[in-house]
Image (cartoon, rainbow, N blue to C red; front, side, top):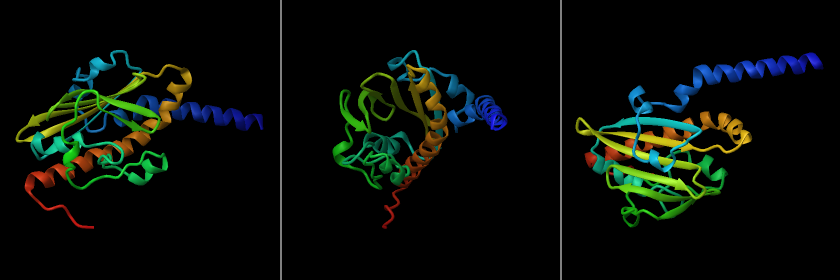
Length: 208
């Protein structure tokens, strides 16, 4: 029994080391260039001392004006969801329902607007139409920023999360959450890309 415990502990330690040294960087920085991951981006000033940072990005063949509406309206019902796996988010009680069209009532976000993401109350702390949208949790431990950069007639969409992890338990608990966050955020970025390119091309929304 003791031998099994030792073997399991060694295997767990080895896997943790493999993840930290080899896999973690690509998981946290999916789609982003080295320049983007190391750059100081708008919204970073909202949480200067971060214990964890992810920077993920995608190219969109549509101008910022076709991307912004999908960001502006994101959030739980009655907002437009997060364009990812709704069923997973709703297992967590987030009440997300990804919209396929533009919701006019949510197209003008303003600094100070709030909504809930589960136990996190998020406020819009930086809003620059077609350029920057940053959310910050009430406790100040999480900032999520979207940056839109015009690029060759299209848009480079960068998503950056910054976390303060105030306890050892929080830091350890974040590690298994990181791969899951990649699955959800990659789906989200691809969902925004699909919707923005469809909007830009004038293609009608597909019917169910």
